[in-house]
Image (cartoon, rainbow, N blue to C red):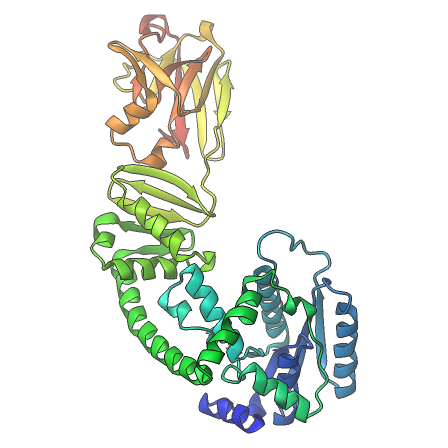
Length: 441
């Protein structure tokens, strides 16, 4: 096994004598075999261990790796999860993410450009089935990568083509001490159920499944590269991407092949770990016959404004901001808008951007419009939302539509409409103006 691991590094042109590497060690058989082999290959190693504080043996395992590294004169970092709440969501996924972030932090601190992990072929097969069951992109289905680069760190898995049985045999022959995590025997987790119930049956049916899986994975990786080229080209041509999200035109997106549509969204929304079902739900929103949609969906915001579609990563401000107007002056309404109240001049107001009002009828309220708001016009009552729809106001701009309210009655919709019940102009002595960034609205 040691010879094959050395060959692995040679195949990727990684020179062992120049390598300073962080290695994740749980004290399980996989990571202890990995650590033993790497020591013999002569790398400069820094060990990272995470104590999950979930089992009685956790303290014993931490002490073991401390003693081991002290004896071997290996630098060690330990992270404890006792103060981290992992009771919500998927414990294994959350813990895995925390571990990886910790390992990367140590890499940066130690200026180590390599992170080495002990994943093996059985892990890869389990991951394949997990992603297959939930629905994933073609790149995700192609399995765990032997090596990939992230933020100037090479993340390496030299044991990925070895089976668990081969690793156990190596540990036994070489008298390697390791610990068993009893939680791996529980069927409370999807991965464990796949490990205990599905994979053994597959190997019973096809004893050489490990070799066939590697062949299949090579084929999927090659296919994924071809698809990724098409996806990257589509993103360049159709999408405007920035740190807060991305924007595209519906008709250009729907012109793509349906498979490529999914792959594009999988890639752009990679950090959200969406399933195939999630991606298909977003595509339904894109194809909806409704001209305007505003949907908070699983930590993203989906906005459709006629042919323009936006997906925002950050929280969209949907608050109902308001201010009470009771005298002449300037009233900050939120971080973006200000209401200015001044004496009326003799200039005739020909539009709805400024509202004439009688100071005797103060106070009034200026606030963002709400879904149930309606206004009395000359021909009857009309919903404010319908006014905005008729005027083809994009849904994001609707969220910043303000109304003038007195005793729960909408007297005006800034920039759009005035109520028939608004004070007659000849009786008005003040002007109420909504301003954005010091410019008239």
